[in-house]
Amino acid sequence: MSGRIKWRALVALCGIFWASLTAAGTPQPDVPISPQGLHVVVNLPQTRLFLYQDGTLVKSYPVAVGKMLTKTPTGDFSITGVYRAPSWHVPKSIQEEMRRQGKPVQTVVPPGPQNPLGPVFIRFGEPRLGLGFHGTNAPGSVPGFRSHGCVRLKNEDALELAGTVYNGAAVTVAYQTVLLNEDDAGELWLTALRNPYKGEDPSYPMLADTLLNWQREKAVAVHGKRVDLALRERSGKPVCLTCTRSDGARINGQLTALRWLNPSAPVSPGLPDVPMDISAPIQQGTGSMAPARKPRPSAAAPASRPMATRAIGA
Image 1 (cartoon, helix red, strand yellow):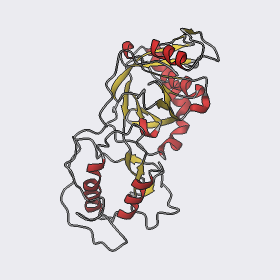
Image 2 (cartoon, helix red, strand yellow):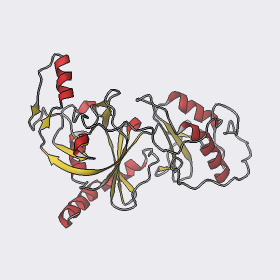
Image 3 (cartoon, helix red, strand yellow):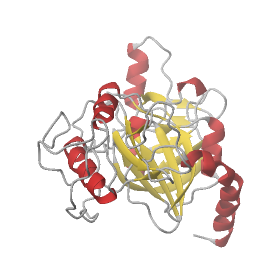
Image 4 (cartoon, one colour):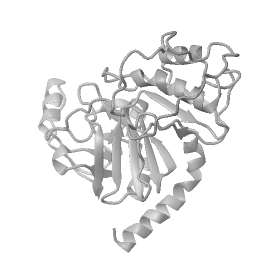
C-alpha cells in the first residue's frame, strides 16, 4: 500500500473514530479479525457491515444484501478496486428481469442520481464475480434483503467506506443467526436473528454446550428460559442471559464477540456446575437447549458458490 493511500485511509479513520462508541454497543458476529490493517466484515442475517482497524471495531453501517433468489455469497475476499462515479453495465440476467417486468431494458446506466450503484463501487473478490459494496439510488432500501448479490450502503456511508479501504484489505462475509457477546461488566448477551436464506444454522447445535461451558467457567448462571424465548422470537435485539432481570437491562460499555464458533478456539475446562439458585439456568440434558448433535466445525453457514454471472448493482 502506497504512503499516499495509507495516509488517506488514516485520515478517514480519524474522521469516523468518534462513531466507535456507538458501534461498540452493536452485537458482533464471531469472525476471526485480522490483528493488523483493515478488515471489513458483513453478517448477512444482521444486514450489518463492521469495519475493524488493527483488530478493533471502529464503525458499523447498515446494509442491504442479496435477496433469497440472488443471495450474497459468504467467504473470505479482499478489496480489489474502488471506482468513483461508476457506470452500471447492466448484466443480461437483470436485463431479462426488466423485460419480464415490462420495464425499459437498459444496458448501461451512466453516472448520476438514477444510477443504482450510487456515487462509488468498491469491488471485492475477483472481477468475474461482480461483487462489491456500493451506494444506491434508493436509500430507503437500506437495510434489507433487496440486492442482486452486492452489498448496498447509503451513499454517504459508501463514500466514507471508499475513503477508508484500500486494495488488499480483508473482507469476510458471514452468515450467523445467533450471536453471543460479553459486555464490559462480564454479562452475557444473546442476539437471535431471523434466517432469511432458510439455510441450516450450523451454530445452533453448538449453542447449548457453549452456554454450559461459559456458565461453569464464569461461575455465573445462564437463564435458559431467556435463551428459548430469544430463539423463538428472533427479534434481533440483544437479550441479557445473566442479568438479574432481563427487562430493562442495559449493555455496560462495549460488546465483544464470544469466540465460540471458531474451531481453533480453546475448549473450556470441565469445571463443577454452578449452583442453580436463580430461575431457569441452563442445565445439561434438559429443556429445548440440551445438546443434541455433534458441533459442526464451521463458523458460517454453507456458502453460496460464487458464480461468474452474478449480477452487479440493484
